[in-house]
Amino acid sequence: MKLVTFQCRGHRSIGKVEGRQVIDLPASDRALPSTMLELLQGGPALMQRARDVRLEDAVTWPLADVRLDAPVPNPSKFLAIGMNYRRHVAEAIAAGIQVPDSQVWFNKQVSCVTGPFDPVHMPKVSDKLDYEAELAVVIGRRCRHVPAEEAASVVAGYTVCNDVSVRDWQMRSPTMMLGKSFNTHGPFGPWLVTADEVKNPHDLQMRMLVNGECRQEVNTGEMIYDIWQQIACLSTVMTLEPGDVLATGTPSGVGGAQKPPRFLKLGDVMRVEIDGIGHIENIVVAEPA
Image 1 (tube, rainbow, N blue to C red):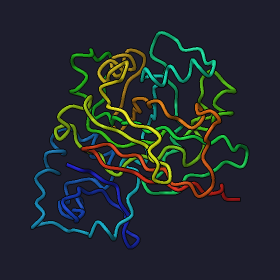
Image 2 (image 1 turned 90 degrees about the vertical axis):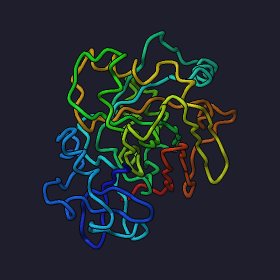
Image 3 (image 1 turned 30 degrees about the horizontal axis):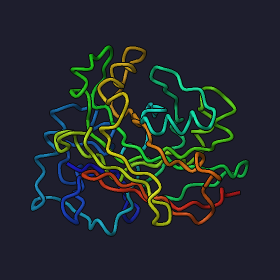
């Protein structure tokens, strides 16, 4: 399934996309909840109920008429791994950044979450705005101490993410959190593709285009730490909850690593594509007063 959170004519709900239609799940089956978190928290039974809603019997909206929000607008956690592609590590070393020999995780505060086609703000306090194409994982059930060989069982699905970064603020602190958490700097979507429809998340072609120019391209199989190792590491430390978003790393080609740097400018359009998942597209605008 392609699960979405959407708005249309003042109505907000969750649905699944079939062709060019969005099936409004709670309007079609009153036993289904109206938020993505509640659907994920309901476990396999509710997820199967959502699968069972048929297009011919459902309340639908044309996909072209709806506004897509982030599939999970209010995750309890939005975590991202740094330095998880070898050529990106090489970029960082060339820029004088020390790279640890273990997984490097940081928070993107959940207030940064925005929709897959919403504008991204150029902060008033910086012009060092950068892009990072990433595959994101959404957790499907509450879990702790998950062995890598069992990690696939806790994944609800996959989505497209842009780990928008403010490089000077990122470098002010070893945690990177401030430079990763500005409002609107966490677009993801356009939908949550359930895990059963992604044959191999480690064999997906991913690219970042800025104004139509390809700046990043990689196969997700080039990750240093695969998704299962990432989940094992995080769940050793903390309880992962349904709806938690894990961004799995960006490849080489970020603007800040170019010589000279190619930071984003007002009016630039970022488009992240992942084959088999979909794409998101966000224009850079001035931060409102």
